[in-house]
Amino acid sequence: MPPKIMRPYVPKRHPLQRLASPALGSSSLLHFAGLSSFGASYKYLIDYPTPINEAYGWHFQYLTILGLALSTLTFTLASLSDLTSSRLLFRLKNRVSVLATPLEVLISTLYGALVSIDKELVIPREFQLGLLPDISFHAVPAVVLTLDYLLLSPPWGIRFREALGLSTVFAFGYWFWVELCYRHNGWYPYPIFEVLSTPWRVVLFCFSGLLMAGSTEVLKWVYAKLNGVDHVKKA
Image 1 (cartoon, helix red, strand yellow):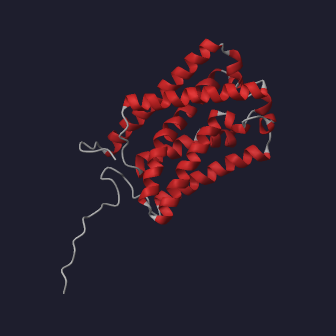
Image 2: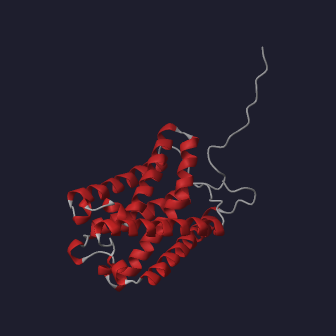
C-alpha cells in the first residue's frame, strides 16, 4: 500500500478573521443584503430620473454613485466567493475593499458634515431624497463594507503613505472626471462645486484625500482593537 502523502494544512480563514468567509451563512447573508440594497439604489436612479440621467457621465458624476459601483463590485466578488469557495475571488474582494471601504466612509462623513451645514450644498432642493433612499445611498454602503472588513476579512497590510497615495490619486482623478463632465454639461453635479473657486476646490480634494487615508487608518485601528494584531504578516 503506497504511503499517504501528507498535505500541508491550509486554514480556511486568517487567524484574526472573526467569522468564516468565504462561506454560506453569515458571510453570504451580509453580502446578499448589501447587494440587495445597492440594487435598490440603482433602481431608484432609473425610476426617479433627473436631468443628470441624460447628462454626460450619467449619475457616475456623483462620488456617491462611484462609491456605490465599487461597493457593488466588492460585494459581487464576495458573493461569488461565498458560492464557489474561491480563494482567488476572496482575495480580489479584499483588494477592492481597501479602496471601496474607506471611500464609503469618506462619502458618509462628508455628506453628513455638509448636510449639517446646508443640504443644498450637496443636493438641489428640487431633487432632495426621502429618508430611506438617503440612508440607502449615504449610509448603508459604509456600514455593510465596514462590517465585511471587521468581521469577514483578514487585516489590511496597506501603510499610511500607501493609503495616502491611493486616496490622493483617486481624489484628483475624480476632480479630472468632474471637470470633464462640466465641459460637456455646463454644470457641476454638486452645488458646492459651483460655490467654491478653483483654489478652494484644490483644498477640498486634498482634504478629502487626507480624510480618506485617515479613514483607512481608523478602520485598521478598530480592526486591531476588535480582532487583535498580526505581528507576523498582514494578509
